[in-house]
Image 1 (tube, rainbow, N blue to C red):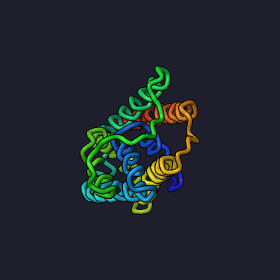
Image 2: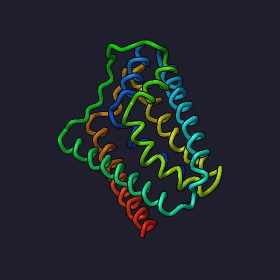
Image 3: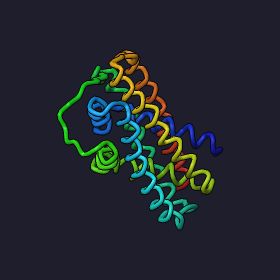
Image 4: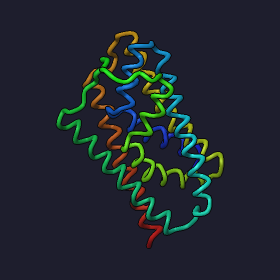
Length: 211
């Protein structure tokens, strides 16, 4: 797989996760209200440092299993099943009208945006599950292209956070709503469809490595 493909798949999957309402989105909205737009880059930086540290640890540990068909197959199946389930859930949320863009501050702890970006991600069980399944599987594939593949994976993944959370910070600070609920739901639906296709492919590839 090319480095460009690794980057854009990482970007697409990253956006699919970032766009869904969750703890980091809530913290970004709160901190942007309190501190202005500068909160968004600091939050993303904290999140990026955590994920860079995790990737380094994973690469060091996975170096011995790259090329192992059984390991690759099991991880591929788990990762594919997870993002397929994630994509299906996104489509169902849109169908049932459960998703809305809420750009308002909520009460919460104030520990600083950088620390909040790090600790919010670390304490989120969904984040851990993502990395234990699809994140691990996709990192394994990226490692087949060496250091450049890992860099493409990380850059695309973090760029998704930069694009979304910077936009959220901008919308909060300016008070503008360029992103209506209708547009937001269409974007989520497209991301869900992308994950369904990608999840199916990963499960198929995982089975191929096991058979």
